[in-house]
Image (cartoon, rainbow, N blue to C red; front, side, top):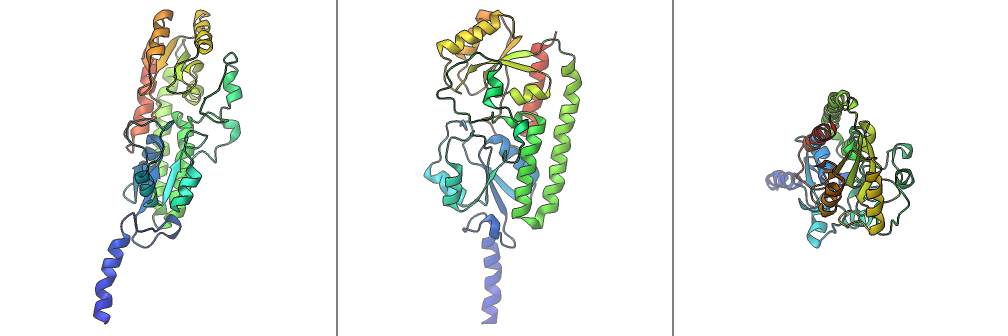
Length: 312
């Protein structure tokens, strides 16, 4: 009987090494790999950078799907059940009921924006100060603008929340998670330090964006988002909203129009043509393929686009 017991132990350990079996983060077993599910490409990318070889990271939504409109399928629910952590952006970015989904699956929900100070966030009231009053019916953002990851500071705040959750769930690999968080923070800060002096030389700084994704990006780099074409992502502007943007442009309050990949850009192109302003693309990284350095690549490309479009 002892011989039989010894032969079964390696098989049991092998079963624990995967991401399934109903074992959750709070009861991570020896030899089991921490499995992290992220709701967006940017969260998956940050988690991959922190995880290294110590954890497995996957993205919940399919590549190319919008986090604004995605809804979980039965197969998605099964994938969540096989994970330990479910990372969400929070701030009403996700339109589905994340707490219920995580609770039903028995996984730990991590709201990566929950620890961000309210004073740092842009509220809807603050952003409306730049625009005339308009109907917000159907606007799917909550009390605060959720696009915090498009600034270096916001991305670091979310990375810190992810690392904290991973270290608490998998303390055996805490040293590695902490070390890779430090490297990620240094990489993001170096990117900001590289571009801040270049953007300070710009004499044109004001822009209109396709949807309300870039206030944190603009604040961090001394730019100003003065208008939004699609108040609700994916929906054409109302007559009142289009008139508001056109008046802003007629008064010379904007220097460029930025549209985004993955959204209908017909309205942006028409407004740019009528105003004679330069038109370019800024990527909010709402869709795309995650990778450990993908967010840095998106931010770098956006910064280069700003320099090229607004530079003299």
